[in-house]
Length: 374
Image (cartoon, rainbow, N blue to C red; front, top):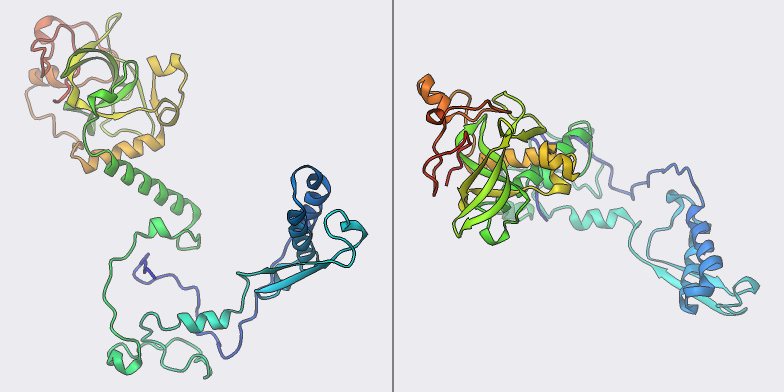
């Protein structure tokens, strides 16, 4: 059995010790659609049996229908195992003749709880249980101190090795006042993003790059809080270089929003292209899963990264050192800033002596462009 810690104080589900001298009563369950299970069984026999149910299958459905017809509420279901029998009559003559009996034994739950509790009671140390919980009356509240300092051999609990606690976001699926549905859902998103970051720990294989697809690449100069950019892949230049077209964020803030909208990075009427090293490609953008609109006309001109994908990118950037604090990249002179900054949105035409140099095979830029880090 694994142990999980959610909060230091835990979540109080049992405010006082229960009385376990007798079998705990089963909780009443209010059911709005009583008898639906039995009705479904009858429908299977009357609608389907002539087409695709064998004689044995018809008998199984008949027994199951009889069970649900007798026990219409959860509180009335007998403890399992339970054997249900059906006597053949005129209605069942096609699969169970008069005088014949079909039976089936159901096992599992519900079953008596007290025997289960007795088997589970001391699989772990119980220092605050200072009485015989199955034969003595329980106190009105849990003791504040107990047998924690006693010799484990004297209490019959043995030695317990400490073990690493599991991540509660992965294993806690119960919603309660200490963890509402929104918190649980957010935790699942965080786990998925962390697993995504761990699974994508290196650069993409050059053989997996496909012309026309969108990719997240690493940049030499940060674009806001991340040194990451978006490109559309073009043709191969050589084994170590690929041609790309650049996109720019439409926003100018340092922080990337929950959904990031891009547009083509233009030099006048020309979509700026570049040649970058193949080891700059980090993540592939899935048109269906990672974009808010996967239609070709939108993803080609104004792709918007979905909230889930941006969250995955954020975890990836943190895990692999692509995060930059505000102002960190702005330590040079104004002239240097103009050469190295990654402008968001369209840019005016610039003279050749103000255009940035790209690292990699092409030493001199012919147009204003974003720098990919190799």
